[in-house]
Image (tube, rainbow, N blue to C red):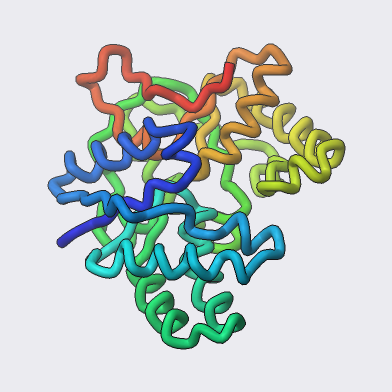
Length: 255
């Protein structure tokens, strides 16, 4: 079975350790991971910003890049969500019906990491070791678009050494929302302030999530608050083992 990695723009440009952790984890579980070099932006940013016509060439490129993959995994709920719930709709609305059909077929083979592990590979204990107190932020796209539910938490509960603590008001947005954080900075900052307060209330040393974008936003808020709390992607925790020097993942900390 060929599992192709959709690395995402953010991992490629800012958090490559998240993509590496995803590959390391899946290979440790005995799977072959490929990386289609033709991949580029999935077009989510264009779609969400109101430019669906400009997203069509990106959707076409995405469909071609991953055409031969048995499965596609993305360490990003937002990008997986765009592929699954936006690509075919946008292509069809722009009159690209053949592309829409191809996008629908690819969407059926595309999974966020926790979905792939739990639903497809049937694994909840990946042999990870991460001896830290961790709280988990369920990002909006993972929660509301993909509806991954308890899958990430189930995986975290099987990580050796990890103490999982509940995040107050966990389902509240962190305030990122892509360009929303730029166009509505004051509102975004106020939402983030509430999220930072909730994270600090847990006493956790790390905040995990399934989207590096939200983690970067949260990490910036933690840094400005002078908090000694790191941000770490779910893939990094699951890829960590007892053989690591101190059980730490590389982290997405922005400090």
